[in-house]
Amino acid sequence: MTSWLRPVKGGESPSLDRVAAERTATERATTEPGPEPTVPVQSVDRALTVLEILATRGPTGVTEVATELGVHKSTVSRLLAVLESRGFVEQLADRGKYRLGFGVARLAGALTVQQDLATESRSACEALAQDVRETVNLAVLGDTGRDVNLSEVRGPASISSHNWVGQSTHPHATSSGKVMLAWTLEPDLRALLGEALPRFTERTITSYAELGRQLSQVRARGWATTVEEYELGLNALAAPVRDHRGRVVAAVSVSGPSYRLTEASFDRVAPRLLEATAEISRRLGHLA
Image (cartoon, rainbow, N blue to C red):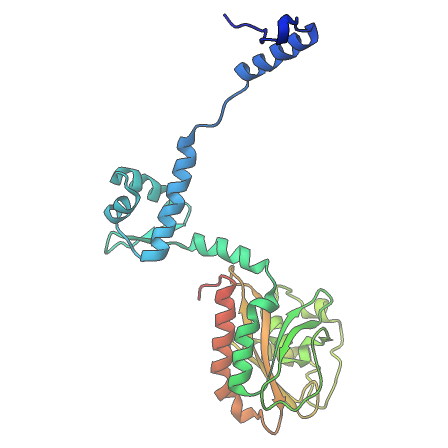
């Protein structure tokens, strides 16, 4: 039988209030559910360990994973089946081994996209600016239909004193803007840009028909150019940055004076630009 009375000092009688409180505490301890079973938690721990093994060792068989975990192969097979159903692992049909699946990349990409895009792209942009010796900018398309420059890296040959960071520009006249317009979800460019396309130089595109033709070329080629369309004497080319879902979320541009960054040099600079944007996209979880 359970005693509701605790020993007290010197024959002192316990108060009724204390007895009631102790009874309530004891009843709560016997009626409230105890700790959750550890088996489900152990399964989660093992599943995560499986992912770590595949990340470290690459394609691995059931027997190897079981040996590493110290469990029976049937346990590993069940874990892998669950992970495969959610896309976190996939089996190589010709070898019977497992490797990480695209589900892991989606999770990693979702985390990375929430981080500072400018920070994630900084090292790639710095290396690009050093290689091509021109100014490199990272831009996004804002809600107002303008492209906004997030960061800038000057190349060793740059002589321009203009800083574009934080400034917004009309996308139809910039290489970054054309990239983002080329993959915009807006079916009607007029709804995004307005009825009239402002002119900045004699080479600015002011016709929606011509803009649409150029955007088709951008999608086919994978990068965009501007030749003195926003400023006289300024040329640029840009390529898209994609997130873990494959969406174009930003553009990286290389710009320089037209006498140095000539139209003839675009084909030479474009491959290095595409390498940089591919690297940034991979950091955002995009799998080409």
